[in-house]
View (cartoon, rainbow, N blue to C red):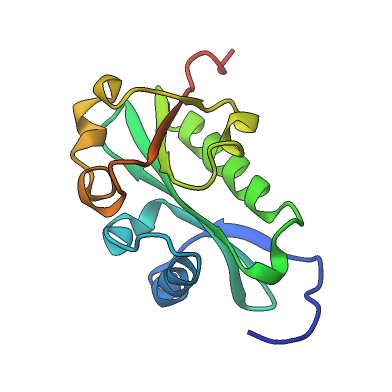
Length: 157
């Protein structure tokens, strides 16, 4: 990381294999799990500024109906500038364009952030089996993590 003030310009794009190490480092710095990231990288978006990855979000498809929203992280110096919000909004739009019915996520720190996108807490017993089988759900995140869902079919015209 540099000590310079970042420019406000960044782009959001699909992640490539070349981004894996940068995404993993960002997640580790944010104390988020990296389990399964390599396998799900094709569903990731990254925010990039001046050639550096400054944020990430992943959509881990679990079946034709559901996906896991995961790995929302932003570099410290970029926090509070709307990067995370734009990443999540773009990920939701991608999920909608794929015809997914719902997104699920697990969080231990952002329970108050995700309702602004329409996510609501859900009991673990009501999570589809395809989501429960993900590494993040059954081993990477603690059992105390809050599970949230966003119904995408109600959002579509």
